[in-house]
Each structure stands twice: as structure tokens, then as C-alpha cells.
Image 1 (tube, rainbow, N blue to C red):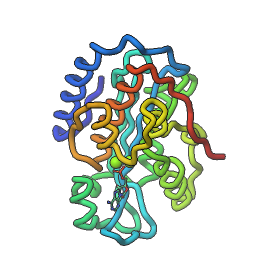
Image 2: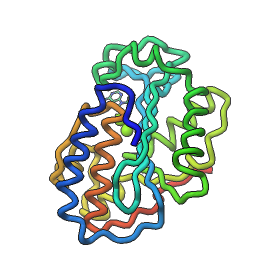
Image 3: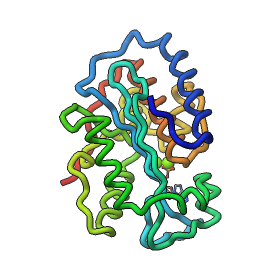
Image 4: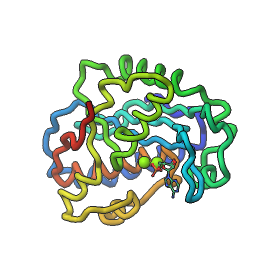
Length: 227
Ligand code: AMP
Ligand code: MG
Ligand code: MG
């Protein structure tokens, strides 16, 4: 598989593989899914401490293509995005996400990244395949992507209008609605890897939760769609 470009994200990917081996021991209750791939997505965006940045803009756009039978990551889309309206990140945002000013300065503006993503969807996933986006919460695809597209006068891609919020699968499997990724991981006795609120690391951890729920016999179906 294609590895992410920066060496910084290489270590969590190795940990992900280690975690995968541990979980393989416990996959007897898996059931067949209705999808070929799960596309784990987690945006990061401009922010400040207790203040809203308007307009809020996406700064990291990572998606993992996870095989719905093996739960292995087969391809990675990962781009940093240069914000158009507030190009200088706040210290709060850099501390929260670990994303540096240089990473966003070296990124492309959102329309270019969305175009690259569309290319990846067509070439590395295949629009004829059965896939389901997986997010942690509804903010990414219900709020952030539509507002970012509106800001740039772009249409939200049709394939990004349906997803599964992993918190709902967790609630169904455990009977508890957990607010955050860390508490879900704790509840499933999984170890968190990487930096919380760095999009790529968040995707890896969501993929670990996805696989743990699959190992407990969870069936993944869409939990929300927009028109
Ligand atoms: P997450 O996927 O939970 O890492 O968060 C996505 C985005 O939500 C971040 O990139 C921030 O823009 C915003 N966000 C998350 N947590 C906070 C926080 N404690 N304060 C301000 N903004 C936040
Ligand atoms: Mg998130
Ligand atoms: Mg995140």
C-alpha cells in the first residue's frame, strides 16, 4: 500500500498493524458486511480557544480505505489544506491538532484538494464499488464539508452524502453512548495511538474501533444522509 508522505505518520501506521495482529485473535464473531470498503474520514479545521473562527475552514483531509472483509487499510488519501480566509493558524489550533503552519502553507487550497480526492475516489476506490464513509460524529460530513463547499461555490460530491457515525455503532454494541474517541477506546480496551485531533491519527484510531466492533459482530449500515 502507499504510505503517507511524512515520516511523522509512519509510526502510528506501524502501531496500527501491531494492534491489527492482536485483534486478529478475536475475530470469530465477524459477520459479512454489505460493503466492499469502509472509508474512514476525519477533518481538522481552523479553530481558536472558546472563539469561533468564521468562516471555519478544513486544514487536514485524511481518508483511509479499509477492506470490509479483512479490515486492513488498503489505500490512504491524506492532504493538508491551505485555508483561504484565515491562512495563519492560531497557537491553540496548532497545539490541539499538532498541525504546523508549514504543513498548511505547503498544502493546496480546498478546491484542488477536493479534486485530488475525487481522483482518488475514482482511481483507488472505484465509484462502482460499495463503500460507506465512517466518521466519529456527524460534524465532518453534515456540517464541515457542506459549509466548506458552499464557501468555495462547489457541489458536495454525491458520494459524500451518506455515512455511518461510529459512536452509534458503539452505542448499539455496548449500550453506552460515548462522547469521545478516547472513551470508546477505553470501553473497548484498545490503546490510542498518535496525537488526538490530528486527522490522520484520528482516522487510524477510528479504524481500530471499527475493527474491534466488527470483531464483536457489528453490522455497519449508514446512520445519516443529506440531500
Ligand atoms: P476532531 O476531529 O475531534 O479532532 O475535531 C475536528 C475539529 O473540531 C478540530 O480540527 C477543531 O477545528 C475543532 N475542535 C475540536 N476540539 C476542539 C476544542 N476543544 N476547541 C476548539 N475546537 C475544537
Ligand atoms: Mg473528528
Ligand atoms: Mg480529528
